[in-house]
Every structure is written in C-alpha cells, then in structure tokens.
Image (cartoon, rainbow, N blue to C red; front, side, top):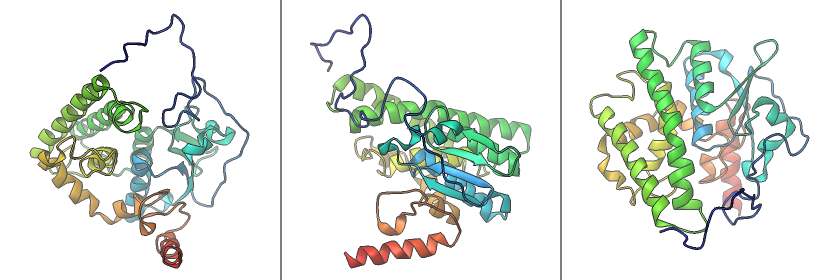
Length: 292
C-alpha cells in the first residue's frame, strides 16, 4: 500500500525529523559534525567499530588470523556509537570519509594505512596475511565473486527489507513485499550454493563466509530484524547447517562479542585491547549484572 496523499515535490527538501529510526543522525551531506580525535592503542591494528553484522565481519577475521598465529593481526577495538553520531567525528571521518563502521587503521605501515568498507578490510587483511583467500586463481575468483555478491546484496537486506520491515515509522505493503521477495531470492541463492558445498566458495573457509555469515546467518536465526518466521527461515536447511557450523568456531565466538552493546552480559565486550579481555571483562559484566 502506498500513501495516496504524497506527491514528490519538484525539488526534494530534507525533513530533519521524519520519525524514522536514526533520523536524528542521518543527513544528506558528508564530512564531520564535530572535532574529536580517535583514541589509539598499542597494537598494529586499530579498529573503530560497533558489533553490528558489518562490524562482526572484521573482528571475526582478526580473531581468525590470531588463531592462526599471526601476531601482526593483534588489534585494539574501540567502540563507535553510531546512535550518538560518533562516526561523524573528525577523527573517524579522516579514516572513513563515508562515516560508516567499521574503519581500520593499520599502524604497521609508515604512514599508517586507512582501510574502510568491511569487504575491503577483509580483502586487505586476507592479502596482507595470505590467509582465508584461495591461492588457486579459479578458487580465488569464486571467493571474490561471493565476497562482492554480499557487498551488493546486503543493502537490499539492511537498508531495504530491514528498514521497511523493522524500522520505518509506518508499515507499507509495497516496499515490504518488494524487499521481502528480494531477500528470499538471496536466501535461495545461498541455499542452492550450500547444497553442494560445505562453505560458500567451496570446501575452504574463506573471507566469503566471514563476510556473509554475520548477515545471513543472523537473519535465519532471528538475530536481526526478528524476521525468521516471516521469511520462513526454517526452509533454508543448507544455510542453517552452514550457519551452525561456523558459529561453533572459537574465533567466531570471540569476534561476535567485540564492540557489542546488547544481549546477554557475557556476550558483550564493548572494547577489546588484549586477548585476556574476553575473560576478565566478561566476568566483570556478569558480576555487575548479578549485583543489580
């Protein structure tokens, strides 16, 4: 159903408070809104992020690299509260002019190398450490095809379906139907691929899995938008099998906790500066929760 009272104006006018989620920070112009330097830790990799699906991709990747013994992947993960507009600080914009999390600063180079956009960060890290990306040209092409499939598909899932189904101030039939159809088509694409492959790009766990799992794995498990029943997620058996297998990986369990600000206390690690943080800071949260 559309709004019969609305006719697009000849020139669009920005309504600064349209009642939608995040309308207090969304704007049609780029650049910083305030001056603030970003903190800097001691490790080679400095990550500025939030525990959303896009942020989880990078923390999982870093934890997977550390699990393989790459000391150069040690990182500090600083929380960027996008609800408070922290992604519009001058320091953050210096790293990512697009003002979206996650943003990475590789301080092992001189000068430090900025990397933004989650897919770009995954590819940068995979190439830097020669891990989670196939060496064989054909397999590498398959991996990258799925990596970029995710980057092109998720806007329809998040900004399309997620917005109109979960966040829009009013529910309209047409956009929900339009984006639901597309998301179910995407799920079918993945389910068919996983019917004949253990992982997304074949028998090897790669950045394609690390990129796709936080979004589509969370979707079929009802962890984003609470839409599993609406989308009949139980019918995508191959995605569910793949989702559960990846969720058991120790590095994934750690990575999904970093920069997380919601859920159970034991699943949240607002900032990560050392491997021991997963034990000490999680225990602190549990004790604080028990004391309330």
